Amino acid sequence: MRVIVLGAGVVGTASAWYLARAGHEVTVIERQGTAGLETSFANGGQVSASHAEPWANPGVPAKLLQWLGREDAPLLFRPRAEWRQWAWGARFLFECLPFRNHANTRQLLALALYSRALLQQLRRDTGIEYDQLARGILAFHTDEQAFQRAAAQAERMRRYGCVCEAKTAEACIAIEPAMRHAADRIVGGIYTPDDESGDACKFTQGLARLAAEQGVRFEYGRTIKRLEAEGGRVRRVVLADAAGRDDPVAAEAYVVALGSYSPLLLAPLGVSLPVYPLKGYSITVPLEPADEAPTVSLTDVEHKLVFSRLGDRLRVAGTAEMDDYNTEVDDARCQAIVRRTFDLFPGAGRPERAEFWTGLRPATPSNLPCVGRTRYPNLFLNTGHGTLGWTLACGSGQAIADIVAGRVPEPDFRFTGVPARARSVLVASPGSG
Ligand SMILES: Cc1cc2nc3c(=O)[nH]c(=O)nc-3n(C[C@H](O)[C@H](O)[C@H](O)COP(=O)(O)OP(=O)(O)OC[C@H]3O[C@@H](n4cnc5c(N)ncnc54)[C@H](O)[C@@H]3O)c2cc1C
Figure (cartoon, rainbow, N blue to C red):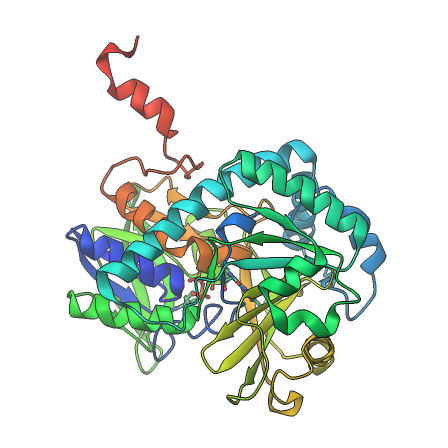
């Protein structure tokens, strides 16, 4: 079947890869000059399957009140006269309720563990290199109460099948000696030895090259203007030619993987997505051989920052800002990340060499991505991966390839418009009663 994938971020590229492996003739349309240049460009690098908890959790509403109006707050709400932003915020608060948080955690975990296994398989099959490190993730705490809550949550994650170990401050420093300068502040940490890190952009571009070798056609520098439907099916996707004129292309199926921009192109078709752009920042510090930067990927829980060593660079990412599609780099927010980084790791390169970046996470209130079908039988979704797009990319890519082929994907995840796995097994099995 001819399939057009819209968007060549980490999610679209992984979708194209798995669709091509399933035997489809795949074309990817992307407005940038190559793959992975928007939100997948300089993210935190963590493949954090065992930490795949939604941002919406019972502790967040109280924190939001504390952070209100603080420019350096890890989560900053810039109110706009826009119902989409307020509706998203209200739904986010609902998803913070304990019963929602538990259900969402289970869902995310199922997809994330599946995705991590597929990423490892892909590495074995192709030898793809992306500055990956499989040394685990250590989420460290500087607040005793928060650490106690995290230890209880780790217990729950263990029940769901994760390897998740609570560690004392001394044990944290033994795992990552570069943390010793902050020894007096660390109260403990949660270590997940099976988690990984790596450069999502290098991965995306490497996978795009591999996919192209398998026959996937990448059309870069092509802006999608709109999707057109007729008779209950998507008929074509209209691109802009060099002069901005309509240039339609058609296929039998379409997969939307446009990150934060997905709802804008789908709304005119009457497909509404609960995806809102959640702006985040990262800094990337070049390292010299003598520099002392962590090699175990870290999460600074109180400051909501993640640290990943990517070859000869240290990437530090975090903060979330609800400010519509504004991608301006706010120097003050980046300098706050620089200060915290060099406060914890004084030997990790030179602060003045840090490069700043910002990206828009395609966030849903529950943190669950929209992967699956729409009311148009030839229009599919793979979008809304929020804080976890790199972690979930391979799993969602394989899942959408299964859904396009009419199969129920393997993980026990609430795929959009697809019957739950257990139910479909019952339906498929004649003797099941
Ligand atoms: C600061 C920060 C830190 C993060 N850290 C992590 C992390 O540690 N681990 C993790 O798992 N996730 C992390 N994430 C989340 C992750 O980066 C995203 O979820 C992921 O990159 C989303 O990928 P995507 O392919 O859906 O979107 P994108 O990468 O944005 O891809 C969408 C593509 O669609 C294209 N496009 C959009 N509109 C059009 C159009 N009209 N025409 C043509 N092309 C179009 C864009 O150019 C883009 O290339 C982080 C995000 C941020 C911002």
